[in-house]
Image (cartoon, rainbow, N blue to C red; front, side, top):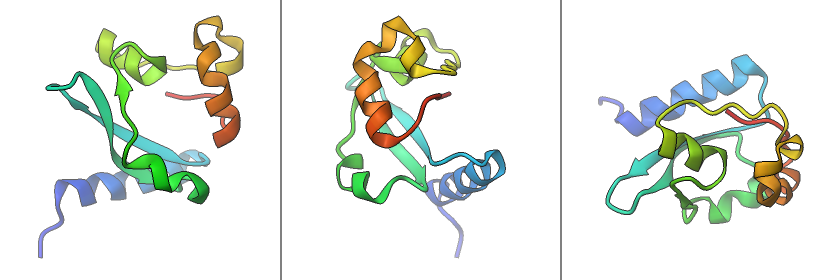
Length: 102
């Protein structure tokens, strides 16, 4: 039986998260029809937050991931709390327990 692209992506993400010693990882895919990002794969996502993960939608231009979509380039944020453009994302980062994101 051949692995699906989603299975391959999930495996790749799990290995990447482990190699970076990251707390967790999430890959988003672009839904061009709605101009939003939706989850495509996750690794080590905090258990208490997995329930809403499937319904997560990030609009183009909203936060680091939405900015990456809008600008069509990698966006690295070493410290969410230090970036004045991300003031609305600080509570999310605190709740999920991360400071930086790529």
